[in-house]
Length: 610
Ligand code: F6R
Image 1: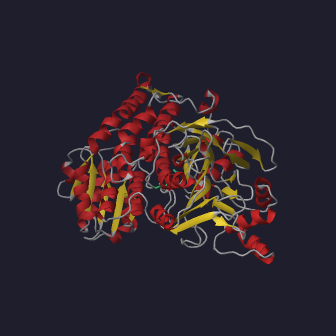
Image 2 (image 1 turned 90 degrees about the vertical axis):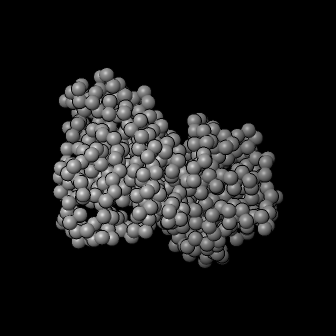
Image 3 (image 1 turned 30 degrees about the vertical axis):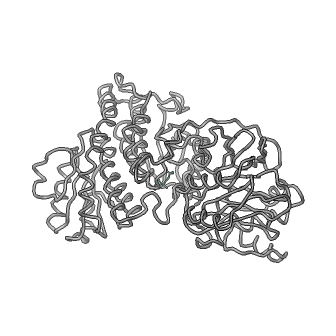
């Protein structure tokens, strides 16, 4: 969601912070700001702007700022509309303390009233501003002491970075529920909410955990808890390359990430498939053979696109591993009274590893005695650090807000897990081999689809002005339909719904007319013949049919208006191949409508608030 970056060193801080903000812009992007320390005791120099970072750069160009210590923020509005006043950093009444914040301060109302009574003046509508005033009220010459006192009064979640020109040789940061990491340089150090912000400068990072505070100086850093007891932290090395977080000649990150999928899927499978034995090796599960064999149920929980891959996982696991499996929205799971035993495995799926609802659901499942397994892309993220075991997706950084390559890697990781669980039960080696071979074939099959992207673009030409879409599929292709509809609505703002194809006649069929494009995900699988009848029902009512098929189908002749063929695979992997033209369709439609594909309105990449 919002992004934080801070720098303390000997260089000019402003270009470092602006570059860091640009790398974070994909997370939240309705306004931004920067504060630099400008000499001991003098007011901190702050510039803010509504809109893109380019607007902030323009504001700075008008009135340049100097300094080698500073903090910066890109905002995704929660309290108060996006405008210059509500943008972070927020400063106290004296103008010497400046603070940026990700998260939500739940008791900001009473705190604000209390602070106003004691003479503090508020200028914004944000929850964050109370933090700046609380630090001011507690400040007695030492910034970390003041931060500890301020945070003792706060309920909610935060990742914060604070500077004070009255204690100028440090940035103080603290975390509860919102990710933060320290970037370690030479004679300079960084604080950031996301490694992308500082990757151009360092690969050595220290991840903060909840309840920890960091005091970051030019020549070092200290991590402690909120009782100021020192906490020993390990240093992690980031393996990403800088070009992985750049567009590399593509118009949008989304298109780059769609095109990367032959490689990202290969990376998800690397070293994990034992095709000859029809088996998979998953080193990080941290479950004994006994635990794996004695599971009595699996609960998969996730949000959004990751929830769609969970639905595919449920079908795979029940069909091939024969373990009872339920899928639940993380936001619902966390607030009900689910049945969890010590033989329950709770799988949490998250690209970012930071989604607040998913993290809370995982903690709840753990508290109830389940073992937890994270399918996470972002190495070192909170879910990856708190789960009992995991399967990293290795899809590389996903910058486009609409999830693409993470989705296909999630489905592949679930297939690897299904193989493992199935072969520990009654899946034959022949079946195991069939699945493993189908997995191995995926990268080349995806490439063959991508080579024909222009065919999808032509279909997009015909539908760029549509106002509604239906996506229909059965079996494994129903979650694929949901994902296709989500991709379209989030980046093109066209209303789209996914449905099980046969459910259409129980209501949505009333919507079908010549204005309604209907996308059928209809590869030649075990339910294909049933889907043909549903296509017929749409056609009979004048609907325009786009079909994703996998071979010449005489039974569809005369019933479809547009067709895109994907290669033939086994039923459970059809959603991986079908996802590619669906992603391309929404990409091209959104691009043709002139929309900001990578940063669709109102959305943020990683949803770290409830
Ligand atoms: C859709 C999308 C979102 C995310 C959801 C979960 O394209 O990106 O629906 O899938 O917010 O995010 P993660 O996977 O990071 O937990």
